[in-house]
Image (cartoon, rainbow, N blue to C red; front, side):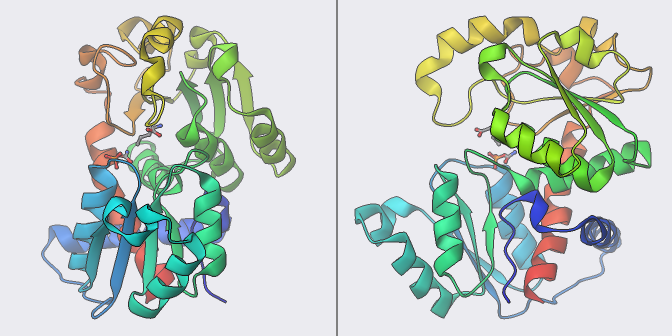
Length: 302
Ligand code: CP
Ligand code: NVA
């Protein structure tokens, strides 16, 4: 059966550990100039319904480094943008390329594409999850803290797609997450309930200091995800008390790291001071998208 990567829970605990170990190996091989063209003659079709810097570049560079090719597809330029059905797009693309990565407005679209494609489908972000980001985040946490088991992560701000994937990932990593959000922007109850049933370790609070206290990792993301731009002013006002700044970082454990999947609105959800501090793992976190996704592509395609 073909493998997809639509949710972080599409892989098991062991598969995740192997994937991260492989990502670390690929990172080291790249550093010393060893080439790994294991996906020669394979093409990844990448559909982007939303903007991207990291996801597009890391997948495109990653496929090139693996000896394959990546195709950037803007739905506006495809017949998809003129109403061709997702299922027909899935069937046709399956005849041309080896895998599809899609960044979609709605999670349903990713599921529909996967249901009708004969090739692996990767979720490059949907309104529900961002599993590729969490792979890189787990790799980064392991690099910095040398473990994930028992690591306390404070998620500060919007209970969004990235937060959902983080919560689910605790089932695989043994991390614990404390989410601090304004009540209106807490992660969706059904996602939390389902994850907890499966063994996720998560607590939802409203006070950012409560979440940050004793944290090994303080993580945040934009207050305005793609597609929510009309709410900028209202959101900015509600989320301001959730800014990750030096004062909040002082609540975390000594030596705690700070993470942000980027793009950041500097001095909104995170101050310059914190983003550019020694505690900041964000640039490694961004780089690790490349290595983690290369390992993922090999797993799905080699
Ligand atoms: N973090 C992330 O997915 O970044 P892009 O939106 O730039 O791809
Ligand atoms: N939560 C953000 C993540 C961007 C990488 C969004 O969905 O826009």
